[in-house]
Image (cartoon, rainbow, N blue to C red; front, side):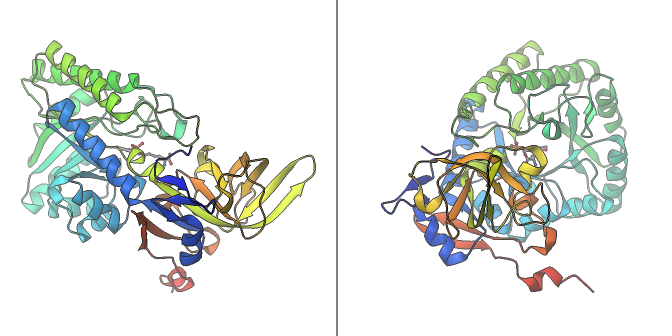
Length: 432
Ligand code: LLP
């Protein structure tokens, strides 16, 4: 009935997440409130890990792309689930290390890591640094020499794949700020160059074609292109790179009629493409990495708001205003992202109001969704927006000096705060 298995309805007709009554959660912790299902997150991790085991005979690792949702507790969960990590900034790295996440399972990404971030990554002994370009290679080599360490690197490659997704979240094509292109030979030149830099050990390649992708075909195509490139490197340079990171990007269900292909089907088909491409190129199957972010946490999270004013503009539209908005979820404003919402205290009543859900920021574009069906609503109702677990808290801001909401983890009928609500004091703590 809902976009995620962790959502149910109880006898009071209240929406539940991981068997916790969302109306009670709103009362206990206040709104706006992010709620994440710990059960669902763990289940998603296990599904990916099992698939990795099944289709790559354990010759691979699942990295959680932590830009989707980053805080101490999620890194603890990932550590417990045996996952590796993709981090993309010194801040994500710091947060992961602060809870004892094993550094050797951390892959450090980013198209413009600063020298400070690179030094921090080297000193922390992260497993791999994913190098974006030749300038970074040069800097990293010099810093590694200075630190007396050798950096194990992958190169970020643009495989030239044009995946069908929103322009801002598409990354595999040549016109992208990320990585080295194959078409114009710059990727091959970089592989050659890596052999000449001191304290650099090139262990493999990485690609990521975009995000919220439903088709399997572009993933298979990307794997083939990357393995052909590994074949060329072997044939022309006599170098057999042992690792291939195929990135993340698997689409999730935001709306009930979204129908993402089950992820183990993706794993099965991509692994078949990997095997046949390796045979064709006469190379041993490399160690495979994938980097799901959204598909681990996205549908496991919801946001609860309290309904304030309901403004019906006759013949035009009805605005239902909530006590949050673009500061806690900028995705509609940024990408026109679709979301499903419902009144959590009337969960199975018919959705016969077509509403525009508006936030409280001083900005007309501060909308969570337009023309969406929800139940008839009154001030004080709890509105739940579904599938907000990815790229909501992690993209939140203090625009209009609005404190960030708390994040609550719901697990098997129990709930606890994992990120506390910001206070007004927090808002001024860096002001001088
Ligand atoms: N690996 C790399 C190198 C990435 O750049 C990303 C996402 C991922 C993995 C994880 O992708 P996922 O499995 O979550 O699709 N803010 C946008 C999404 C930006 C994605 C950035 N990179 C949004 O809200 O849709």
